[in-house]
Length: 494
Image (tube, rainbow, N blue to C red):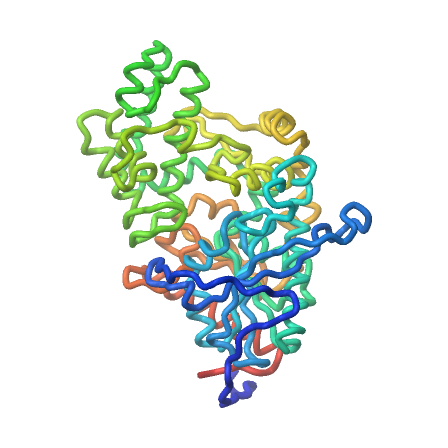
């Protein structure tokens, strides 16, 4: 390859970003996430974005302010690639703070880095506090979000004098799905995509509805079969207490702020407890993290140690859930309906306004019909069928889901004619088997990370990283370098 590369040694003066569509944000106090200080690197800006890209009448070409983060710290101005993170279901600072690999790679390839916030999340609210009302929320679609990113990429490239710079999109989880879709829908703008832990198949309704919680269970089973059995046994005891309506004892055992009083309350308690195990499986990193909450190093192992060391199974189940819901140990009791909100995503929508947006997306385009059955998994039977989804979504948002839409709009499993996409997955991640696990061609590459949890490869380097993720990151860097060189004929070096 080296014979084809042209190397440039240049000295550039980095200038602040002042573009027609951008408004600078006031300085923030630096914060540190897992060794990666984001505010010291990024400027927070706002882009004047079209509210409705596909209807010329409804909004009268109205606009809203879409937030994005940008750093030129590493960029070989006018030549280096552009690394564009396709923001997903939350505040964009959270993703920038936990995606250090992009900055590391930007330093190697002299790239400009942009993290774009998804419409209806964080501060990118098209209708302010009314954004989650019907019908305003109807403009929250994957297609609108992709068009946002495409417009932003095209205009920022022009304004930054980066017309010839290749764009590589990055994303994790739903953001990884968006990166895939950007390459499919806008290959004129995007040279390649790194899609980490992107469940592009299961969210299109392809696969087994039992897979997700079966794989959560497998994570705990891999630590010890006794751990799985203890969790299953604890849920059985809870079910027996509920059947006998021993609600006071349930309140005492689980330190609930109020006693449950109905089957609905017990269902909520089961969902809250199941969600704790889901989060620990997803974020089973070999070091402590502060992403979507506080997690100890190796939380699945910690959970199993907790489950197997308590005085009784119910106390152990409570203390294990406390790893997620009471990491500080300061909560005097668990409030059932504030720690967990049931929604159209059985794996959890989170809390606050962002959870409303995700619930709506799960009610429209994104198929998340996962269920537990206590046979292939360790959790109580909790069904969530397409019929359940339809009933819930009609009542909550007055919408009818389209379960087959992603198969048409974003190709389903017929991806073989696409190109330049990396699908990375960790074998500890319960989302992994909802994604692409085998390479589809020489440019549709599946990378599997042994001992890796949810998009571990996107996180910054850590001394505790397994060798598998170090190797995968190197492969990803090599492929992204090739895509960038193919696009421009130029590779930038330090």
